[in-house]
Length: 248
Image (cartoon, rainbow, N blue to C red; front, side, top):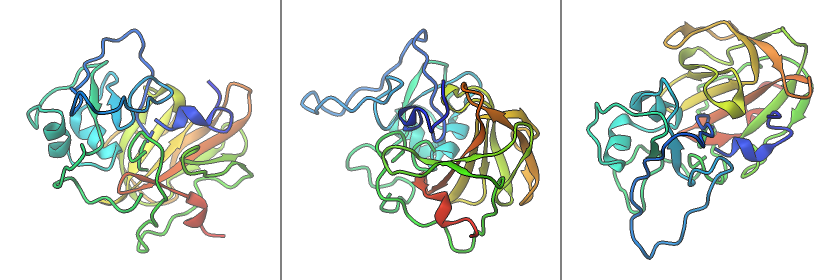
């Protein structure tokens, strides 16, 4: 699959964690009402606001990637807070209509990392206290576009180091999300996460603490052989334009 620049629809479902799994069984939570209109489907066949579980996922990891609390995801999906999730299972990752106790959501690394997995609303600004650095310097091959692309693509040279944009902890490092290829997601605080997709070799693992500027991966290439990294920023789970947060 081509990188985000080539096929933006594949990234509407990211936030970071969506993987097409047509061969897996789907355990779909019931809709709120039989009269509710059919939900918008993402490019991976999962309704907007839902996520299909991949091998190795946990409720806590999924909640972190979508900027939610594990206890909220458990409540929305009518399961115990410590419940195990199964590959192919489809979970609600956005609050159901009228839900009042969800984690705070501003008016917009929200999927995907969308409101999570749907068409993105206007992006909020990331916390002023969090200063981001460029993960790599290079030409901008794809710009942020609400509802179309949740981040940017930065070009470069295959194999060059991708660096953490800010200090934090790695909450995902793997290749289980087809649209992103080898992917690293870093949680910086309770509000902000960054994601780095289409890497080559990963240099960190889950639960690693990283410092700003620390190498976390090597740049990979897309299916056309074009090197670059997909870089996304999420604030309270909502996509934010990285170019507004990076130094000029």
